[in-house]
Image 1 (tube, rainbow, N blue to C red):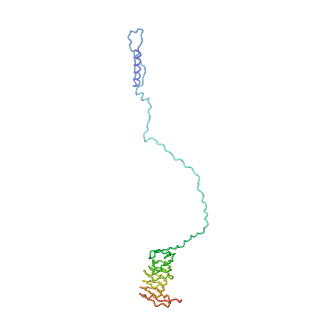
Image 2: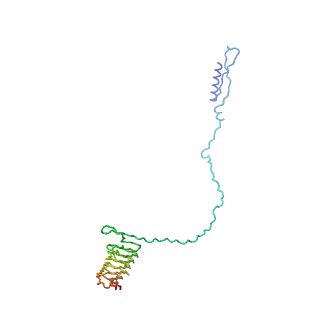
Image 3: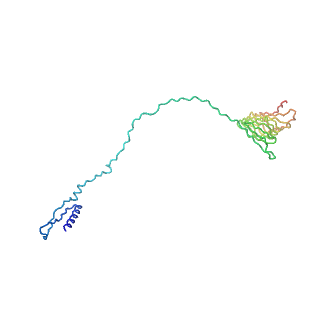
Length: 271
């Protein structure tokens, strides 16, 4: 019985401490006579602090407003004076001029063109060989065309050909065919602006317009030769001669000749 009372009292004390109240528990007194009634006498077991007093004694943390909070500032490291490490200007020594090495100019390569014969078999000899400005022809039964010469271009024709066609000459260009033998020479374009044409032996020559100034044409016509031109304008010169003195007179189909132009026959050279 007493143990139960003590256990209950302890629970009450614990509950009272949690709530902060003063708890008085009855303490049983022991008399000599166990049969007497034991009156409970309240005795204070413990004095617990009041809740208000507990709040006052409890320390509180002070919070500062956001505006009063100071943010730490990190100062940049101070620059130390460093010695100037720039190198002093070093005088530049000029290299002695080296002799210029001239590149070797490649010589023009010969371009050969082999054309098939009429019977379908190829010839073993090139009919056209081009070496720089020189064009070598070896085709007595064939035809060859020279493109227009402009801006002082030059061309040299040698060999033999049946029909030679020339597209024209402009701006002091030159055509030297004095070592070419052709059966017929035809100018499909005009000869202009101080150009110069020298033709070898041919039987028939056809020229369109020749315009000056200082444009020159010289030709040698073989036996029974024919010369035909359409017009000589300005200070031009057209000269022709027979291949042999004993040849009969040539056939001339003369066109218009301007007063400043010169058209005449030369004396053939003596053999």
